[in-house]
Image (cartoon, rainbow, N blue to C red; front, side, top):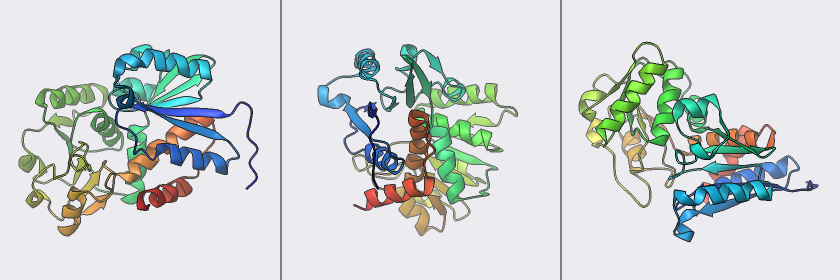
Length: 288
């Protein structure tokens, strides 16, 4: 393909801690090439500079000065970035977290593609899945976004279980304020919450390469459950292995990673990405 690079070239990036293994730059740059756009996507790893969220004002100012089209934002910046922005999308405001910042005419607008990205991957993998009673493990940033998505998808009952019980209770209260039917509640015990459940969503770091293991006992995974994972390093986590072994239908964490990137790419560039192409590229990257 002959690619004509526009002037100036498009710039984007990811701000977070410990992000050197992120596949997001490769996904964005490759998709941009298919649209005839030269996009450079820069990793801005706070760990490399022994920095924290206090670096955000300077990084956003630099992005403005350098003409970035946008920035993705991940741990530990999703909430800390909000006071530094000029505007928020309805989605980001409802979730109280930002994972995508768009720069236009010197203004910074925060968006959140976590929930929509998870929903894209889930519905693509398990269309028509039973959402009558779902247990969500993890009430942090990703868990919160998925909780909003599940209620918007029509989940009948959503149970939230988190190591920080107060965080789960606060999220349930906020969800019930925003959505009709008082369908969200904090859970105290995984076994009790899974009794009669149709699905399980795992939204904690457990299972990552650096934090291996299962988030709950494998014996609790009944074949009637579908199990959705957000971890994608590795793609086949211990939870997914156990779920498959017990006959559960599963959704791997890569589907959310691609879904997030689809939303962010369109926000940054104004171009509609090819979902099948981006997903195939992601799978090749993981395989490599």
